[in-house]
Image (tube, rainbow, N blue to C red; front, side, top):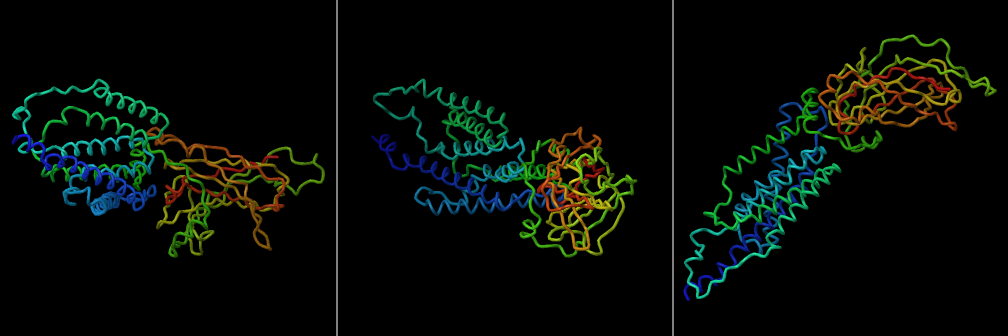
Length: 476
C-alpha cells in the first residue's frame, strides 16, 4: 500500500509533463521571436564594405541581438503562460540558449541564400530535442525502481508494430522530402525537413527512456560558452564574403555557394528619400584615353527611305566616367578628375549611400534618331563581385534650350549573373554585346551624346563596378 500511494502521488505524476510544457513553450516562443528580431535588426552588409575589425564587431552584433531577444522572449512567454511555465526564467533561458544561439547564423545564411542554410535547422532542433530529453528526465534518487515495487500481477507491455516502425517511416519520408526541396534549391525548407526527420529518430530512440543523473542543471555553463563561441566563429566566417579584400571575399563566396537574389533597379530618388546625402562627397570623373573617331558622322534623316544609311557606324568610346551619389545627378564642382581604366580602379562609397556610375560619350554633331534603328553596345566586364549589374542607354541632346533625353531601357549584363568560382578569379575580362532598340515614336528628334548608366544590385552598390564601355555600333 505504501508503494502504491507513492506512485499515485500528484508530484510524481505532474512533474515530468509540467516540465516538458515549460521547455516547449519557452523554446517555441524564443526561436520564433528571436529569429524575427534578428531578421529585422540585423541586415547583411554590402559587398566590399567590411574591414577585418568591423567583421568581428558585426558578428558580435548579430550574437548580442540574438541573446537579448532570447532573454526577452523567454521572460515574455513565462509571464504570458505563467500557468504552464513553473521554472525560473534564468534556468529556462540558460537551458534553451544552446539551441537558440544558432538563430543569427540561420538568418544570415537565409539572407545570403547560401546552400549551407540546410545544416542550421537540424542543429537547432537536434539540440532542442536532446535538451528536452534531459529536461524531462527525472532524478535517479526520486525515480522508483520498477523491480522493487511489489505487485500481485505484472503484465509485460509490448509496443505495437505500427508504433515501433512509425517514427522510421516518418523520418524516411522527411529525408526524401529533403532531397526534393534541395533539388529545387529551397535550402531553408530542405533544412526543416531534415531537422524533422533527425529529431523524430532521436526522440524515438530507446536511450531517451534511460534516467539521467540530475535535472537540476540540464545544461552546463561550459556548454553554453563553447556553443556561443562556435556560433560566433561561424558568423565571422559567414561574413567573409563582405570583406574589402576581393580575393578573400570571392574565395569565401565560392566556398559558401552564395547566390544573390535578383534585385530590380531602383530609382535614384526613391533611394535618396530614405538616406541622408553626404555633402562632403564631390564625386569622381575618370577620363578615358582619346581614340580616333570616324570622320563620317551620320547626317540628318533622308527624305527618301532608299537613301537611308545601309551600313552601321562604329564609334569607339573615349568619353568620361562619372561617379556620384544620390540625390545628385552628376559629380559636383570640385570633383576629382583622373585618367584611367574603370576595370583597373577600385572606387568606393564613403557611407551607406549607393555609388552611381555613368559613362558619357559626346558625339559632336547631332544625329537624327530616325537614321538608325538600334545601338549595339560593346562592354567589357572585369568585375568578380557577385551581384547583378544593370546597364541602361540614354540618348541626350545638349543644346542652347537645355538637355532632353530618351531612355532606351535597361538590361542585365549576363556575365554579372554567373556564379563566382575559384576559376573566375584568374579568368580574363568578359566582352559582351547588348542591343538597345531606338523607338520609332519618340519626342527626341536628334541626339549628340550617348550616356550609359551602370547600376549594380543593392547588395554590391557601395563599390564601383569594374566595367568599361568599348564602343557603340549604330545599326541601320
